[in-house]
Image (cartoon, rainbow, N blue to C red; front, side):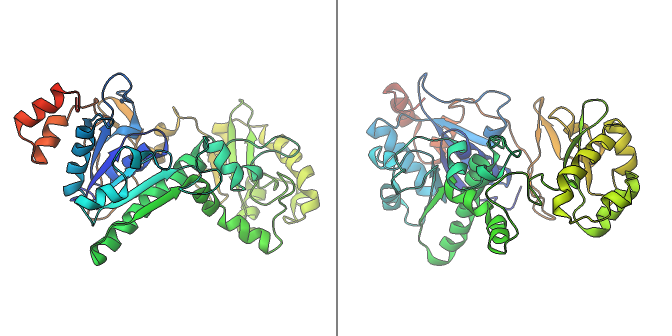
Length: 378
C-alpha cells in the first residue's frame, strides 16, 4: 500500500539522513532494498531502529568487482538509487551515476551529503551542527546572551537532509516518467537548512528580524506570547498566541493585567512582560494549565517528552504513534485518503533478504552460492 507502491529504490546503507530518506520512501509504499556491507564492518540495524523500518536487506561487498556487479544488476530493474558517501566514493566503487546509467538510463540517482558535490568544503567531514551553522540557521536559535542551541539534529540531518532528498527523488522520478532519462539529485544539508530559513530571510528583507541578537524577535522566544514556560510542578507549557484574537484569549484565560499586557506589540516591554508571565504560569501545574487552555484558540500545548507524547489523547486518537513488533514509533506521514501508507516490517537483519532479492533479479541458486562463497554477498 501507499502512493509509491510499484516503485523500487536501492539504498546504499549509511547513517543519519540517508536512512531517514529510505524510511520516508518505504513508508510511502516504495520497495526499498537496503544494500549493507558484509562482515563485521556492516552497519546493521538494531531491532528498535525506527529509521531502518520497511526495507529489504541484502549484504554486498562493494570492494569486490563482483559485489559491484550485483548492485548494478539490482539497478537494472530499479527506479532509483541513493547513497550518502563523500563525493567521488561511489565512482571509485564502480557504482556512480555513469556506471548505473549504463545498465538503466532512466535511473534516478540520489546523493546525500552535508556540503554538496562540489565547493571548497565538499571533501570535509561535518555533522548537522556544522551544516546548519553555515546556513545561518543555528545562529538564530537560543537564548539572549547565551550560545546558540543545537535543535537536536532535526534541521540539517532530517528536515534539510533526508526529507529534502526524498522530495527531490520523487520529483526526479516524476520527471523521468516524461523524459525517460534519469538524473542526479544533489541533496546537501547546508542547502536544505538554508531552504528551511526562507521565511526568516523574508523577515530580514522586510526589516522584521534582528539577526544580530537572539531572543529579541517574534519567533525566537523574544515575544512573551511565543515561548515556553515552567509550571508549578517543574514541567513546561508552550504558548503561541500571535494573532490579536488569540492574544486576547490568552489575557482572559491567564487572567493577565490588561494595563500591563494590553499592548501586545510593544517590543520594548517584552522582556518585562516575559518575567511577569513566567511568574503567573508558575502558579499552576502543567495539568491545571491544560484544563484552562488546551483545545482553545490560545495556541497552547503542554511540552511532552518522548514517553508522554504517544499517550496524549489527541495523538492516540489520530494514531500518530504506532507499535510494530513491540517497538513504539512515529506512524508514517503524511496521510492519504486512498493509498494509505502502512508499516510492513521492522528493521531487517543484515542480509536477511539477500537470496530472495537476488533471485528476483535473475541470479540462479548456483550463482548466489558462488557469490556467497567468494565473499561478494552475505
